[in-house]
Image (cartoon, rainbow over all chains, first blue to last red):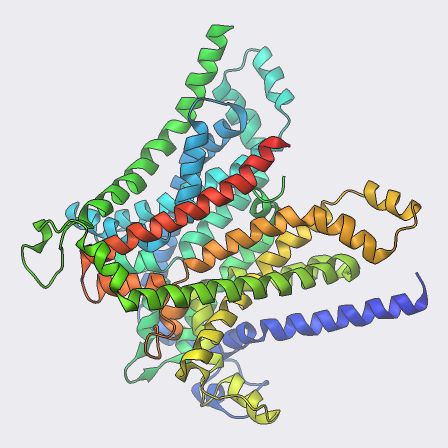
Length: 274
Length: 297
């Protein structure tokens, strides 16, 4: 590579870095504000250097009891992820390994579930849950979130199972293992990374979800996103506290996602790239 | 042999069964229920209206409801603009990172991934924070650089929709970029080597080899993004509330308002049925384009 090419390359990368920093600025600003006092947050020109404080976090999570919403969010996310994986992973394996009559139709149905707007299911589920006395309960929201996530798990996991060579399980079959053993002792361990990425994805879906939770949860079961708009009061918007909740909603998602980043991209693009 | 086949079939069915049962119970049953109530006159304001059969009245009403058509028009503009912008920006970023990223490849991708992981509701709040006329970063920048831009873009219809589109572009350009980048990396080397041996120029190689290779992935990503954009709710809900007027009221928000603000349950159910049919068409398009193609390979 010539010197000129090298310098073009470096300039482009620097421009790109600046662009990405600028792109992320609104988000970084939000996180910064969560650690600012009220005076610092509203000062013009904006303060880049300030004395960080955790007052916002204390006010919203302890005094306003958002800790219980955080607990609700954790519980729902945990249950939804568990159920979706337990139900979805075997089905994904079957899609990858066996061809049976009607499985194409089922796969299309899964796709349909993925494409359906949340409101289309949320409205009838609201009536059904209220008839079953499941409105404002954890069971109601967990069931509803699972519907979307099971389809998602099957879709994503099929891609991961497809990458395991079929010869491996055929040889185990010849050795006399049942399909259940093959699935549990070969399929699952070999796609552990894929399962981890799918679990993170599932958890993020449920953790970030707003509309279904807004309709199906109540005061006692509200998740963090549902409780968040409550900080925009008629007396004024509590920006510092909103920023604090925003940080608590997003930072765990980022940490977990970066842990499985490589497999997440692979899973996202399965269905688009072979 | 036939025993063997039977065993495979039974195993497969057993593996599918839990998912099939649960999904049917929580998606099929609500959908059918939805279709049923869409033929009734169920509203909260009239007692006993739950059992009044009105036939196709709700569907007829929908076709003459200018608020419905307004929300469809808003949604259409939102979907087209945000998908196109994501396509252009995402592809350009992917190309730069692919060809010039070098060792910074990983850190650049990680950084760019952040927006799509932020909860859509928080994205909306973040923008309303940034655009706050009193202390927001946006109005500060407008002042400092003397930009001739409105300091309150959310107070007029056209610019409010533009802001809404930008929030979606901010959040999902990373997805477009990741998809395109993955496609670029999966292009095999052989055709390039052959083309270079034949003395083809870089632009010709890009047009004749790179573009045909990444086109299928990019087109699938466009469909996925368009469908997701069609379902947007959280960001307009928190950022504009559909306003000013109903200039940013997308179809999901309109349906939500009919159901849970005006309590016209049956009318909202009819809206849901129409929405479902529209998305089903999109699903069939996706199926033909993606799944068929994979099977042909």
